[in-house]
Length: 233
Image 1 (tube, one colour):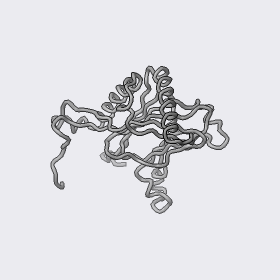
Image 2 (cartoon, helix red, strand yellow; image 1 turned 30 degrees about the vertical axis):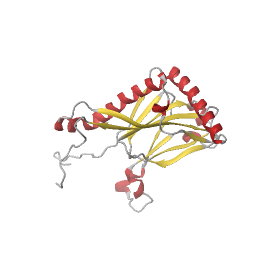
Image 3 (tube, one colour; image 1 turned 90 degrees about the vertical axis):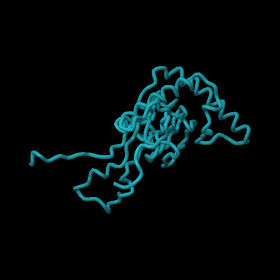
Image 4 (tube, one colour; image 1 turned 120 degrees about the vertical axis):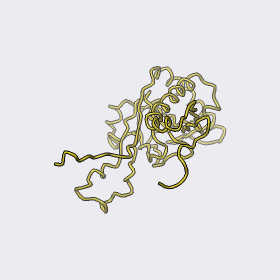
Protein backbone atom coordinates (compact mmCIF):
# COMPACT_ATOMS: atom_id res chain seq x y z
CA UNK A 1 0.00 0.00 0.00
CA UNK A 2 1.25 3.48 -0.87
CA UNK A 3 2.16 5.26 2.37
CA UNK A 4 1.36 8.57 0.65
CA UNK A 5 -2.20 7.57 -0.21
CA UNK A 6 -4.90 9.69 1.36
CA UNK A 7 -8.63 9.10 1.53
CA UNK A 8 -10.99 11.92 2.43
CA UNK A 9 -14.70 11.51 3.09
CA UNK A 10 -16.86 14.45 2.05
CA UNK A 11 -20.43 15.66 2.55
CA UNK A 12 -21.14 14.11 5.90
CA UNK A 13 -24.66 14.70 7.22
CA UNK A 14 -24.74 16.00 10.81
CA UNK A 15 -27.48 14.97 13.25
CA UNK A 16 -27.46 16.29 16.81
CA UNK A 17 -29.08 14.54 19.78
CA UNK A 18 -29.41 16.12 23.22
CA UNK A 19 -31.51 15.52 26.33
CA UNK A 20 -33.42 18.25 28.14
CA UNK A 21 -32.55 18.33 31.86
CA UNK A 22 -35.99 19.34 33.14
CA UNK A 23 -37.81 17.09 30.68
CA UNK A 24 -40.22 15.38 33.09
CA UNK A 25 -41.88 18.61 34.27
CA UNK A 26 -41.76 20.25 30.84
CA UNK A 27 -43.25 17.21 29.13
CA UNK A 28 -46.10 16.88 31.64
CA UNK A 29 -47.06 20.51 31.11
CA UNK A 30 -46.84 20.29 27.32
CA UNK A 31 -48.85 17.06 27.21
CA UNK A 32 -51.70 18.77 29.06
CA UNK A 33 -51.49 21.81 26.77
CA UNK A 34 -51.50 19.76 23.57
CA UNK A 35 -54.43 17.55 24.55
CA UNK A 36 -56.44 20.65 25.40
CA UNK A 37 -55.46 22.22 22.07
CA UNK A 38 -56.49 19.13 20.12
CA UNK A 39 -59.82 18.86 21.95
CA UNK A 40 -60.72 22.49 21.29
CA UNK A 41 -59.64 22.31 17.64
CA UNK A 42 -61.53 19.10 16.88
CA UNK A 43 -64.68 20.37 18.60
CA UNK A 44 -64.52 23.64 16.66
CA UNK A 45 -64.27 21.74 13.38
CA UNK A 46 -66.74 19.01 14.32
CA UNK A 47 -64.03 16.42 13.71
CA UNK A 48 -63.18 13.17 15.50
CA UNK A 49 -59.87 11.97 16.92
CA UNK A 50 -57.86 10.10 14.28
CA UNK A 51 -54.62 8.13 14.44
CA UNK A 52 -52.56 11.25 13.59
CA UNK A 53 -53.23 14.82 14.67
CA UNK A 54 -51.03 17.76 13.61
CA UNK A 55 -51.43 21.27 14.94
CA UNK A 56 -50.81 24.44 12.97
CA UNK A 57 -47.20 25.68 13.03
CA UNK A 58 -47.82 28.80 15.17
CA UNK A 59 -47.35 27.31 18.66
CA UNK A 60 -44.90 29.99 19.77
CA UNK A 61 -47.21 32.77 18.64
CA UNK A 62 -50.33 31.13 20.04
CA UNK A 63 -49.18 30.25 23.58
CA UNK A 64 -47.34 32.22 26.27
CA UNK A 65 -46.27 29.05 28.06
CA UNK A 66 -43.25 28.73 30.36
CA UNK A 67 -42.53 25.13 29.33
CA UNK A 68 -42.54 26.05 25.64
CA UNK A 69 -40.16 28.92 26.42
CA UNK A 70 -37.84 26.62 28.36
CA UNK A 71 -37.87 24.02 25.60
CA UNK A 72 -37.20 26.51 22.83
CA UNK A 73 -34.37 28.11 24.75
CA UNK A 74 -32.84 24.64 24.67
CA UNK A 75 -33.72 24.31 20.97
CA UNK A 76 -32.03 27.63 20.14
CA UNK A 77 -28.87 26.61 21.96
CA UNK A 78 -28.85 23.27 20.15
CA UNK A 79 -29.40 24.74 16.68
CA UNK A 80 -26.51 27.16 17.25
CA UNK A 81 -24.35 24.26 18.41
CA UNK A 82 -24.80 22.19 15.25
CA UNK A 83 -24.84 25.21 12.91
CA UNK A 84 -21.62 26.51 14.46
CA UNK A 85 -19.96 23.12 14.16
CA UNK A 86 -20.71 23.00 10.43
CA UNK A 87 -20.18 26.68 9.58
CA UNK A 88 -17.56 28.03 11.99
CA UNK A 89 -14.86 28.37 9.33
CA UNK A 90 -17.17 30.16 6.90
CA UNK A 91 -18.59 32.46 9.57
CA UNK A 92 -15.07 33.42 10.63
CA UNK A 93 -13.87 34.03 7.06
CA UNK A 94 -16.74 36.42 6.25
CA UNK A 95 -16.68 38.14 9.63
CA UNK A 96 -20.20 37.07 10.55
CA UNK A 97 -21.15 38.22 14.03
CA UNK A 98 -24.27 38.70 16.11
CA UNK A 99 -25.96 35.80 14.40
CA UNK A 100 -29.65 35.41 15.09
CA UNK A 101 -31.67 32.21 15.17
CA UNK A 102 -35.34 32.41 14.19
CA UNK A 103 -37.95 29.69 14.66
CA UNK A 104 -40.12 30.05 11.57
CA UNK A 105 -42.56 27.29 12.50
CA UNK A 106 -43.28 25.05 15.49
CA UNK A 107 -46.06 22.47 15.76
CA UNK A 108 -46.95 19.26 17.55
CA UNK A 109 -48.22 15.86 16.47
CA UNK A 110 -50.09 13.18 18.40
CA UNK A 111 -50.02 9.68 16.89
CA UNK A 112 -51.28 6.22 17.83
CA UNK A 113 -53.02 3.18 16.32
CA UNK A 114 -50.52 2.93 13.48
CA UNK A 115 -50.44 6.65 12.78
CA UNK A 116 -47.36 7.74 10.82
CA UNK A 117 -45.92 10.67 8.85
CA UNK A 118 -44.67 9.65 5.40
CA UNK A 119 -41.25 10.52 3.97
CA UNK A 120 -40.71 14.27 3.59
CA UNK A 121 -38.30 17.15 4.19
CA UNK A 122 -38.75 20.78 5.26
CA UNK A 123 -38.45 23.98 3.22
CA UNK A 124 -37.79 27.64 4.01
CA UNK A 125 -35.22 26.89 6.70
CA UNK A 126 -31.72 25.53 7.25
CA UNK A 127 -32.31 23.31 10.30
CA UNK A 128 -35.26 21.30 11.53
CA UNK A 129 -35.84 19.20 14.59
CA UNK A 130 -38.06 16.89 16.57
CA UNK A 131 -38.50 16.78 20.35
CA UNK A 132 -40.10 13.72 21.94
CA UNK A 133 -42.68 14.73 24.55
CA UNK A 134 -44.27 11.34 25.25
CA UNK A 135 -43.97 7.76 23.99
CA UNK A 136 -44.11 4.23 25.37
CA UNK A 137 -40.95 2.74 26.84
CA UNK A 138 -38.49 1.11 24.46
CA UNK A 139 -39.28 -2.34 25.83
CA UNK A 140 -43.02 -1.87 25.37
CA UNK A 141 -42.58 -0.63 21.80
CA UNK A 142 -40.25 -3.42 20.75
CA UNK A 143 -42.61 -6.06 22.16
CA UNK A 144 -45.27 -5.04 19.65
CA UNK A 145 -46.31 -8.15 17.71
CA UNK A 146 -46.40 -6.43 14.31
CA UNK A 147 -44.19 -3.32 14.45
CA UNK A 148 -41.41 -4.57 16.69
CA UNK A 149 -38.20 -2.53 16.69
CA UNK A 150 -39.51 0.06 14.21
CA UNK A 151 -42.49 1.01 16.41
CA UNK A 152 -42.59 4.82 16.44
CA UNK A 153 -38.98 5.43 15.39
CA UNK A 154 -37.84 8.37 13.28
CA UNK A 155 -36.11 7.16 10.13
CA UNK A 156 -33.69 9.33 8.11
CA UNK A 157 -32.80 8.55 4.50
CA UNK A 158 -29.40 9.10 2.86
CA UNK A 159 -28.67 10.99 -0.36
CA UNK A 160 -28.14 7.73 -2.23
CA UNK A 161 -31.68 6.46 -1.70
CA UNK A 162 -32.63 7.17 -5.33
CA UNK A 163 -29.68 5.12 -6.58
CA UNK A 164 -30.71 1.88 -4.94
CA UNK A 165 -32.55 -1.10 -6.36
CA UNK A 166 -29.48 -2.89 -7.64
CA UNK A 167 -28.73 -0.79 -10.73
CA UNK A 168 -25.70 0.86 -9.14
CA UNK A 169 -24.53 -1.97 -6.91
CA UNK A 170 -21.60 -4.30 -6.90
CA UNK A 171 -19.36 -5.30 -4.00
CA UNK A 172 -17.25 -2.20 -4.55
CA UNK A 173 -20.06 0.10 -3.41
CA UNK A 174 -22.06 -2.22 -1.18
CA UNK A 175 -21.81 0.45 1.55
CA UNK A 176 -24.44 2.47 -0.35
CA UNK A 177 -27.10 -0.09 0.53
CA UNK A 178 -27.16 1.22 4.10
CA UNK A 179 -29.55 3.97 3.06
CA UNK A 180 -31.28 4.85 6.31
CA UNK A 181 -30.48 5.82 9.89
CA UNK A 182 -33.00 5.14 12.66
CA UNK A 183 -33.39 7.34 15.71
CA UNK A 184 -34.86 5.50 18.70
CA UNK A 185 -37.24 7.94 20.42
CA UNK A 186 -36.95 8.76 24.10
CA UNK A 187 -39.10 11.30 25.94
CA UNK A 188 -37.01 14.39 26.65
CA UNK A 189 -34.64 13.95 23.70
CA UNK A 190 -34.16 16.53 20.95
CA UNK A 191 -32.94 15.71 17.42
CA UNK A 192 -31.69 18.52 15.14
CA UNK A 193 -30.94 17.81 11.48
CA UNK A 194 -30.53 19.58 8.10
CA UNK A 195 -33.92 20.64 6.80
CA UNK A 196 -33.34 19.00 3.40
CA UNK A 197 -32.78 15.54 4.90
CA UNK A 198 -35.59 13.14 4.01
CA UNK A 199 -37.18 11.49 7.03
CA UNK A 200 -40.27 9.65 8.18
CA UNK A 201 -42.13 8.98 11.42
CA UNK A 202 -42.71 5.22 11.26
CA UNK A 203 -46.09 3.74 12.29
CA UNK A 204 -46.70 3.77 16.04
CA UNK A 205 -49.01 1.78 18.28
CA UNK A 206 -48.81 1.89 22.05
CA UNK A 207 -50.43 2.43 25.43
CA UNK A 208 -49.35 6.08 25.48
CA UNK A 209 -49.76 8.42 22.54
CA UNK A 210 -46.60 9.38 20.68
CA UNK A 211 -46.39 13.16 21.13
CA UNK A 212 -43.68 15.20 19.44
CA UNK A 213 -42.87 18.83 18.67
CA UNK A 214 -41.31 19.70 15.32
CA UNK A 215 -39.79 23.00 14.27
CA UNK A 216 -38.01 24.82 11.46
CA UNK A 217 -35.19 27.29 12.12
CA UNK A 218 -33.24 29.89 10.17
CA UNK A 219 -29.91 31.51 11.13
CA UNK A 220 -29.22 35.03 9.87
CA UNK A 221 -26.39 37.55 10.18
CA UNK A 222 -27.05 41.18 11.02
CA UNK A 223 -25.48 42.18 7.67
CA UNK A 224 -27.45 39.62 5.66
CA UNK A 225 -26.83 36.06 4.56
CA UNK A 226 -24.36 36.35 1.69
CA UNK A 227 -21.30 34.18 2.33
CA UNK A 228 -19.84 33.66 -1.15
CA UNK A 229 -19.31 35.70 -4.30
CA UNK A 230 -21.58 34.82 -7.16
CA UNK A 231 -20.03 32.96 -10.09
CA UNK A 232 -18.39 29.70 -11.01
CA UNK A 233 -15.03 28.36 -9.86
